[in-house]
Image 1 (tube, rainbow, N blue to C red):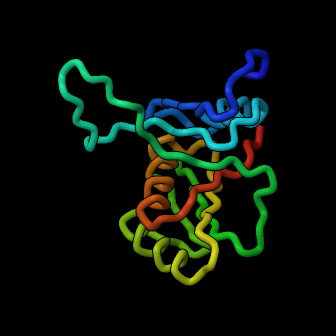
Image 2: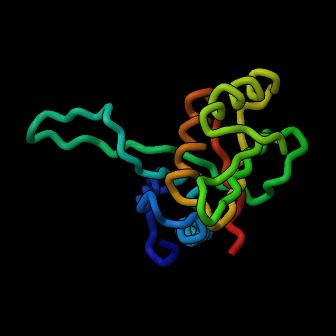
Image 3: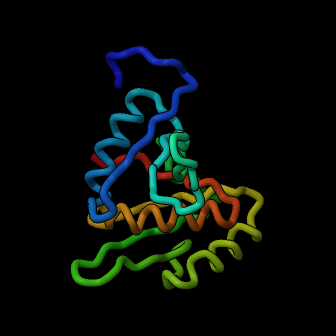
Length: 152
């Protein structure tokens, strides 16, 4: 990505297996950051796309920002903490939240703040599916998901 020139408006699409660890996805994010892709798009399966036979559907995904200076005093922070045998646990600004309540609670936090950005900090053992679910919840409450810079 770094050696081959590209148009600045080009997007980088990242498709990962839902079972892949976030640590694996971070390697792609590290390369994207080094190549100055500010907003990679995670490709996910969406059932909204219904292309007619013979028509190519454009890729659709979850757009994210990569943040090099991840600590902002005003940021809403969602932490995804992996567990070896159970789904990852979540916190929003250090308050525990269930997966079922994520979108509603995130919406409450976003309404109370002027900024519409949510910093997503994830344990490297979390799965890509868990990270995608958090990013999707951010989009549902009209907040921009910002991934902390890769910690590789």
